[in-house]
Amino acid sequence: MPTEVDRHQVQELLAKGAQLVDVMGASEWDESHIAGAVHVPLKELSELAAERLDAGRPVITYCYDSL
Amino acid sequence: MSPRAAWRLESLGFDEVYDYVGSKMDWIGEGLPFEGALVDRPRLGTLADPGVPTCKLDDAVSQVRPRLGQWPLSLVVTGASRVVLGLVRAENLGGDGDRPVAEVMQEGPSTYRPHVTAEEMSGKLKDSRARWVVVTTLSGQLVGVVQPEKIHEAAEAARA
Image (cartoon, rainbow over the protein chains, first blue to last red):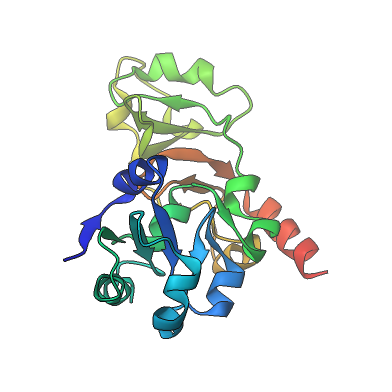
């Protein structure tokens, strides 16, 4: 079960080598994304996850906001 | 959207998966680093003057007056985290100098986040009589203040 985390926990996980994944579409990604994030849109997750992410490291997903 | 992605990643064999509940708006709203087209546009965070005078709730009015200098206002902030609680205008600092700032401040002024672009803010200010825009992080920490005129100018320049 994925664990919900806040901003502070995200920073701690990143410092330990976690991967941050932006799952929004291309236009939202182009407009702005968190520095250092990897772009893997939700709609292409199945096909791109193995290519762009390391399954051996923690992964943090994010989108636009909490809604 | 991100919770669904997190669940899907687990089903794809990722063992340690987290979901950042606040997501991008929480991060950017806190003034943390981001990339993309928005970075190059004038934003409140880059336009705001961080040098605005500040005071505490229990400071005496007589203590605050000399801090203003050329500023027509002071922001009431609390503790080391500099969370904005109120605003004191110079015209409210007359009279009894022993009164605490808490008695003369305007509580809960409107605040805006650092990532808001000048173009967006200029539109919001169209019918406003605000003389200052107070910029804080999402958690309320003071970034600075900016005059509407400066926002309108930056918006015009961005559109040109």
